[in-house]
Every structure is written in C-alpha cells, then in structure tokens.
Length: 326
Image 1 (cartoon, rainbow, N blue to C red):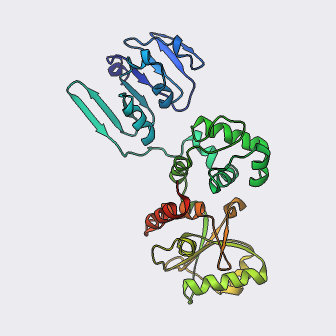
Image 2 (cartoon, rainbow, N blue to C red):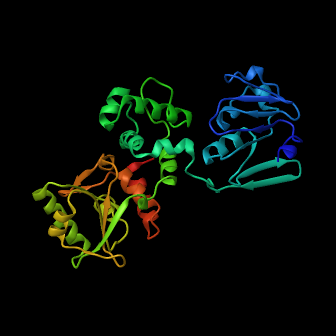
Image 3 (cartoon, one colour):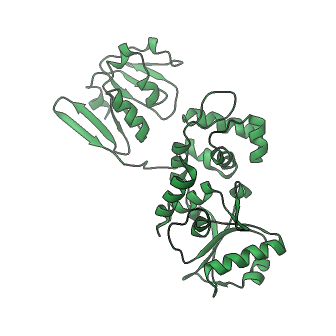
C-alpha cells in the first residue's frame, strides 16, 4: 500500500489520535501541530493527530492534500473531509476516491475491532460511571471535584477520562468537563457494550411479566433490596413501543430472599425472568421511579436494548428519539 500511496501527490496517512508526525524522505520528526514546518511533496507521509486536524491545515497546504487514510474514519469526519474536497480511505473499507476518471465511494462499514485499546479505558465500569453522569445531563458543565463526587470515583480518574474525551474530540478543552458531542459518544459506547456483558440468571415464573414486576417492587419495599427494571420491562414504563414476554431487571441482594418472594424456577431455556447481576453499582445511576417502580436510566435502557436482536433496536431507537434527544 505504501508504494501505491507514494505515487499520489499530497497523500496523507493518519494515525489514531496521535500527535503530528512528519516524515519526509527517510527522516522523521515530531512537531507540536506546527503546520508551517510541514513540507508536502511527492512521497511525503504525514500523520496528524486526527482527520479533523488534517482538515484544518492552512489553505496553502490543504490545496496539496488530495487523500487521507486512517485506521477508521467516522461518518462525521468523512463529511468534513468531503466538504474540504479531500478524499479518504480507512482499514474498515470506507473510501471516497475521486481522481480523474476514477471515482470510488464506500460508506457504512464499521470498525473491524470496535473495542480498541484507546477506547476500552472509557467504557470500563469505573470510567463508565463518569460517562453516565455526563450523559444524564449532556448540557451541564462539571467541576472536576463535583463530577468525581457525583460519580463516586477519584479526581485522578476524572482527569484521565477528561483527557481521553478531549483527545477523542467528545469534550472541549475548558477547565470544566462538558460533553460537546453526546450523540457520537453514545454511538461509540453502544459499539463497545452488550447487555450480555452482564451476568444474567435465567428463570421461569408462572405469573406474567407485569405481575412479576409488581411483586418485585412490593418485595423491594419490604426487604429493602436494590433493583431497577431494564430492557423491555423498563422501556415499557418510559417509552412503550413494542410488546414483550419476559421480565428483566438489575438486582443487588440475596438470591434466597428474591427466590422466596418471587418463587422463580431456574430455566436455561424458555425463561421469562432475566435477572441482571451488576458488576458495578454505577449501573443504577440515574434510575427513575415510575409508578413506584424503579427503572434504569434512559441511557442504560438504550445500551441494554440496542444490540438485542428481538426488536431491541426498534425500542432503543424510540428511547433515544423520545427521551435522550442526542
């Protein structure tokens, strides 16, 4: 590929979220986003911090850039490069090449390896606590200390997450923490999350899902255990869209107590009771009371449903459109 690209004047190779690295002939050097030190010539390979950085180079240089490549180019970045009349290609197979008689356009391919090391950090349970707080009210600006207190994590972790969000262009560079692109952040999260990541115990109950959910709420009042409806059980309370035939909820408490109250039977197949055992209490952040029943946050409902094949995507889309708004 390198030999092919070197035949294209002004070709730009772009690494994921790194600093600018200019490589002219066989010598390479690092710069601090100083485009005045960049010389573009035949055979030059340039790796800026992101495709967006490339699209902001001075006009006298941008006229010499014809195409850009990266491990992955998001839809929004592709639109930006297209507006700048810069072609692109990535390792997922997306491309826009318009050179003389050649025109190629391929869109819609996703990351071949969606859980990249640079992104894994953001979606680990402790880091995800911070994201839940930020997405709960996406327009709010947070001081680091206040955000750490609200999320129940250290200031050091908040600082690291903030740095990563800025690096990925999901947040601005102000002293506070504020999400500038909540929709893109949520899209990245859904690609790195599945409801099946949770421990799920499957049971069968003779009562209907609606009746079981009421029994669960009553038992929680007397036994004082923590729970929150999720999947279709939760969605039916806040944005009903599809019918469902199984109850699902997060539960933190004694299994014996729950069994005594609901009397479910283990059922590896044909289960109509799905009990999610959270690996981190952050899952309960933003839980809402709807008709005296605890329901997981809208963000959590969306994440749990979006990758569920049984009409989960439709229900998730309804939640996002009606309740999230980004």
